[in-house]
Image 1 (tube, helix red, strand yellow):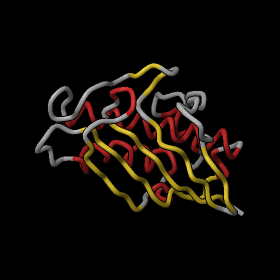
Image 2 (cartoon, helix red, strand yellow):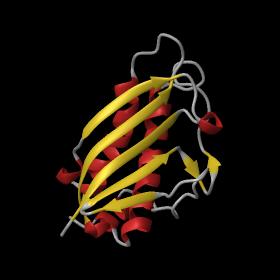
Image 3 (cartoon, helix red, strand yellow):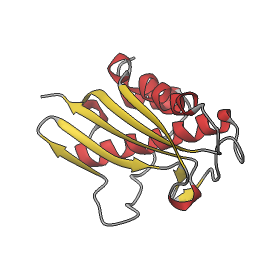
Image 4 (cartoon, one colour):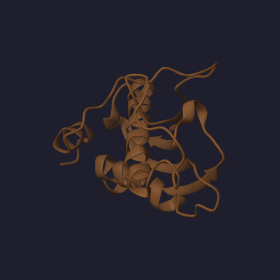
Amino acid sequence: MSDPYERIEASGMELPACPRPAGSYAPGKVLGDLVFASGQTPTRDGVPAYRGRVGTDLSVEEGYAAARLAALNCLAELEAVCGDLRRVDGILKVNGYVAASEGFEEQPAVIDGASDLLRDIVGDPGIHARTAIGVQSLQGGAPVEVELIASLKS
């Protein structure tokens, strides 16, 4: 099964509508065969599904689930910007930010949620380079934010 829509359905998920920008920016931008998707937090229908800092308010497993949802929202952005997820040739780079308690060092395990979802939906072309960074806080009390760069089929 190589169709991303079939993979989403088979996983029991639904691709949400593209989240509305929380400020003065576009959900994503296409430049040549690259797509830059703006950062997404774990929201459903514009409502935070997770809040707090990982390591204090949320476990690593809850942070992982939040990162999966944020990555799913990034896929919704890609669809909105490109018109069809089948146009995505691969995920090149993911930046993941984790609102973490002091001394928390498991950011990579949290952002694995986003990486695993992208691999599951896009397949091997979803395997990407990545950064996982701990931060003091994120917009709206979100525990994670995920942004990505994808390539498009020519």
